[in-house]
Every structure is written in C-alpha cells, then in structure tokens.
Length: 417
Image 1: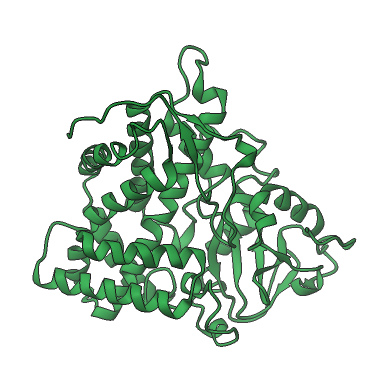
Image 2 (image 1 turned 90 degrees about the vertical axis):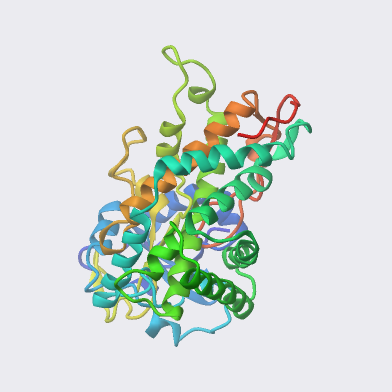
C-alpha cells in the first residue's frame, strides 16, 4: 500500500531533511510495479520533486520525480558523483540488488578522470558497430527463432522471440561465442532479478574473463576486440567490468523496450488501424515508450559526498539519489501528455553519464528491427490476454513484463535468409 501522510513537500522556508518529509515508499514491491504512474502522481502531490523511498527493505534512497531537478543533478557530477564506494560500506554486501548498483571500475560507477578514461574506451568501441550489419543480423537471426513457434499459433514473444533474438544479436556485435553467451545470459537474468549477489558476480566474472582472454588471442571486428585493443590499455579486471556494463545495458533494457512497445502497438488503435491513411510507425511507438515507460524506469544513481541542499530539501551524504526517468518524462510541468517528438526525454539519461550516442542508435534500431521483423512474419499477431491481466516484474529499477503472450494464425516455417 502507498503510505499515507499529511505533510506536503518541503517549502521555500522549511529546508527539510528528506528523511523527515514522510514515510519511505518501497519502489521494489509488486504493488509499485503494477501501478508506477499512480505512485508517481501521488509522490508529486505528497512530496514534491524529491521523494524518500526504499530500494530494498531497509535500504533508503531519494527518488527524483521532477524533470528540471533531474537534469540539474545529472549535469552536476561534482556534487552528485556516481561512485557508490562510501555508501556501499554502510549497507549489507549481500543484498540481492547489489550487482546492479555496487562499485565497479567501469564507465557507469566512477567519476572524474577515471570515468573519462573508461567512457572514451567504451564509446570508441561502440562507434565501430555497423548499424547496417545490425539490420542484417536481426533479419538472419529472426527466422530460426520465429520458426520455433510459428506453427503453434501462440507464443510468449518476450521469452520465445525477443530475448533469444536480442541476446544473439548483441553477442554477435560483441564477438561473444554462444557457449560464453549462455553463461552470461544466466548471470544477467539473475542480476536483474536480484538473485544471490556472490554467485551472480562470480559466474558473470568468470564468463567475461574467458571472453576477454579469447579476444586477446583471437581478435575480430567486434566491440570486445576494440575494447581489448583500445589505447586506454584496459586490464583484464577492467575489461570484465566494462563488459558487465555492456551486457547489463545491451540486453535487458532493449528487451523491455521491445516488449513494452509491442504492448502499446497491440493495444492502441493509432498503431493498429489507419489514422489519416496509415497506422503510426514503429519508430513513433518506440519514442513514445521511451518517454512514458522507459525500460529502466528508475536509475542513473548518484551519491552526494556531503549533505546537499536541492529544491529546499537536504539530501544526506553518501545515500543514493535515483532519477525516475519515467516520472520525470511524464512530469506535468513539462509534458502535457503529448509524446510525439519527445527527444528531450531522459530514457538515456543526461550529462557525463548519459548513454553514448552510438549505443542509443543501436538500441533504437535493434528494437525497431526486432519488432518490424515480428510484424512482417506474423502481421495478425494479437495480445492473448487482457492488458490488465499482464504482470509486471517487481524491482526498483526496471519496467519489465513477466511475459507477453500473443496469438496469431499458425503459419508454416519460413525459409532461412
């Protein structure tokens, strides 16, 4: 249940500590996952721009739900650095969400010159991805995936189509062979679902160390090789942690974007019937979902090094400040409800730690190609259950369905491309 209280958000004269503003709201619960936008509306009404939350039982944080405040924080890495080291010493090491937020020597969990070095290596490696080749990978890989269920007339397109396709294409882009990829896939799924921190880190690390070793002796035209050979001179340990970031960002978020966009397209008449001649295109649906329900709804975590006053609220030192991209993108002060032409949205963050431009292009293209391939193969695909019966996975960070069941006229297998 959403905690009730009578105190409103901090005013210009109050300058309240965030922990005194009212009860903390658990954003990891099934209730929150079922109706996040209802929570965001009540958060704005009851607390204002900054909301005391829990990201796990007993683990406090502050959630930013106002767009202007989020942009200010994301563009002030001096006062809001991304390094969680000090905070990490104050919480249990084995909380299940730790692999998603703990310190790592990579581009998302460091600040200053160290961050600049990692980000340069990552951006340069990603810049080598040929987007035309991504289209070909999706087309070539989609056929055998669709053929596993096309004769059945029904499928969970999340687990049976989008996941194997997204993961396969990403592994091809990274130069990751299938045997290592399968080990990474199991660890990645456990990471997002918050399963056994020690085991997740160990299994992920071993697989990615093997990938690094492979590319040092067998280089190729791929992201991992470009990282290995980058002038930054990344060590094996640094390589592992850059790859952790790449897999975390390159599989689960695109997967959720695809599923959430397909849900919109199958339930909104703007995409299913002609409006002024033709239905709206997939690219429009993707842009809208990035604004209204981004795949990482609450993330972009920073940790102020000293008590910091913002929006007349004192934020404590070394406690997570989390940007709610979903809440900020739908902030009524900024967004009156029109999502078309929403390039301003925070789905890819902003500032020093914004998603590299090449990664943004890859993510959008991948989502569009995966969706369009499905609709080309199965143009009469429909949601198999009422949209209200779908279940959203609980967790403090993602906006993710547990499954997306669909039905369609059975069809014979398609020839290989």
